[in-house]
Length: 296
Ligand code: GLU
Image (cartoon, rainbow, N blue to C red; front, side, top):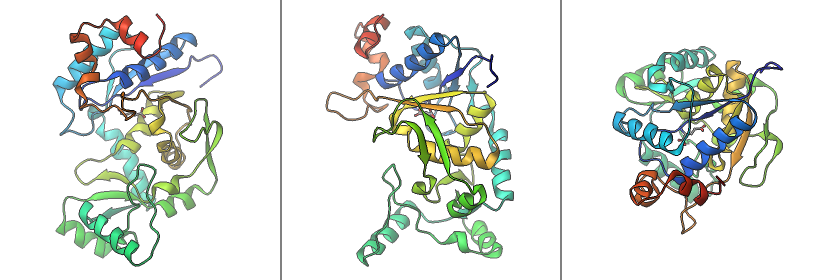
């Protein structure tokens, strides 16, 4: 960001279900921060999952956001229109020899980790609670990789975490103006190794959430990433990818999550907190804002 350029914020929902109060909160925090700083507010439709994201859900989502009173620059960026951008970035990482094909199914991963634990080996989970990848394909030579790729045309591509960290060869950090789950704030160290060899793309999709989010934040010139606290630890790998791909580093702000009455995270299938259901029950945008702590 140059000295006189306005800050740029974005709200980046996925049209794979109905927007709920948590989305409304995140969108409104971004919108309000943009207004307070005379910044720009952009919308990004994160629809790389071509099975779960559907045009009718996107239409409903845009309508819900408009109903709430949000205004964004048009057109919004739709990720499915830009697979070429992600492909190019993936190729860069492949050329640096930082990506390998992996072939274990979820069940094979689970079984392998269970067996390790039974034999007394401590096995770490990633910050989302999934076990780190236990496969050994990263050590295979090119011929072995090629042979198995022909055998299993559908497979995952993973970032070789140790190689990537070595490639970057410096400690990574980021500026957090909100806070993480353990009250992390200010200049925070990033520990991408906590995610192990995460999936960076699939054989049938040249990207993943982590890869596309850093590419799009850079291409859209996002200076402030404002999102829910559940994505705080994802920032560890976002910083790594930004460094590997020579992308600028935005400032981060992770905000509170709106929880359901039972204290659990809201989900897109929890019908009763969807904006649609609340609207159908007679709530106005002002009611929604009041409900999630925005005075109007
Ligand atoms: N698309 C993500 C979600 O709906 C948000 C991504 C982000 O803000 O970085 O949870």
